[in-house]
Image 1 (cartoon, one colour):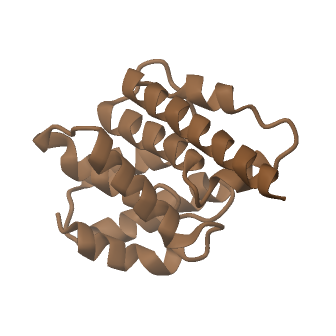
Image 2: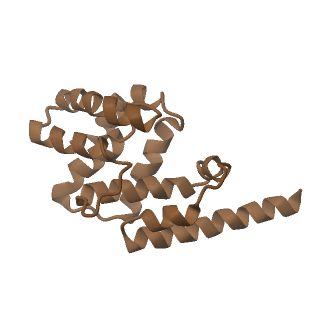
Length: 167
């Protein structure tokens, strides 16, 4: 599957979201840099990452509209019905935390949580009343994601302290 072509098809939909296509590209890069994907799972994993927020900004829109939009885009790329069904199932549940998710789901989920700690998105979440960063760290599936999340959280907290001292 041509990842660049899928991104190109997805951009008009992703740009309508709060963080736009930049969020999706960050999630994609986090996944590629930190989580090795078995060759036979790469297409499903990468398609799920690219299309995970395609339905809109709200979780409701992502779950209700995302799978239909994703199916149309994947059909344009001549993907099989089974492949499309697999990707749409991941998209329609990607904010949930099942006990035994598929590997593509886990990679998307962990990468989507890690992006919250990025310089571009941290302040958005950190400004929310009572936001619990440790809960986000503990929700990740892999040990590596928990370690990365903890390191990134420490880095963002240190940056915040430095910024506050400069005021």
